[in-house]
Length: 308
Image (cartoon, rainbow, N blue to C red; front, side, top):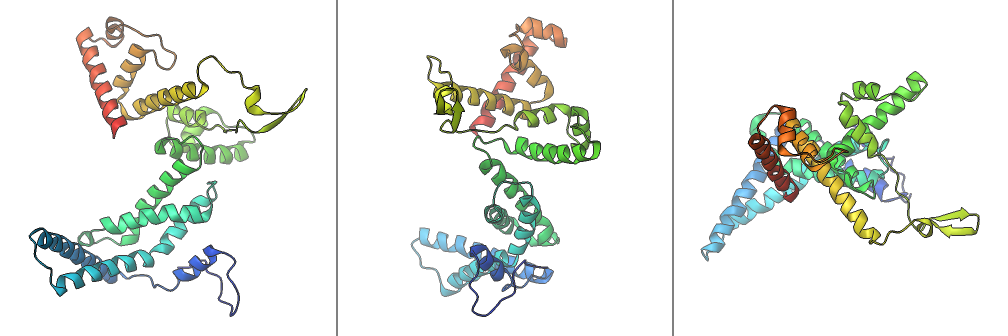
């Protein structure tokens, strides 16, 4: 597999740390399936030795040299396992770098976190090759990293992933059709329902600094000076609005359709007027008590999700 390293020229100073990193990738050979199993066994033995040493220390006893050696060998096996698969992270990071505002070095750092987690969780007894298993962890780490760092206001990872799909489909369909695609065309292209496409599009907004200079009829000014302020604290308003939007997004993504509908109607979410238990029950063909129980379960589930 190509590492992307540049040829080594004697006496030439690398352009940046990323050059050094790419060159270092080639110093560790890729692992065969048997080597992966061997390293995984040594890591497992090292973890078992660590647990035994902890138990001995709890009893006030000293561990033997063989246990300490097993721990060192397990740590060395872990380091080797990670180093030998760093190129896998680079490949996955390069794929997403075209649609991310993060630099390749930042994406590699995020992907490496996923690789480390994959090495920790790898079970050699299942018989599959590590790269197949690790790719999922690396992609998840990249997705979380992009969701958390690309935007000033962080989006939930699921919404961010959908936004990336919708953006890509929007560019492709726009080039094919010669016009902006409509909602159902985006839904078909991304295999998302229209509600999730609409949610992704509503989250695709730019953030401007209040210190940004702007030109007015009276001369240059800062954007913040032109923003109308209510008597309430603007910070409090923004925090409250973002909190409510976060709760609504969590409820929409986590709750069953009927539970989400009950919460919308009972609490006046998404433009609905607050409705009584009897009114919601009549709409769903349920009793007041059944609606009340659905509402209570939905609120409890949502509270648990927000506390996690």
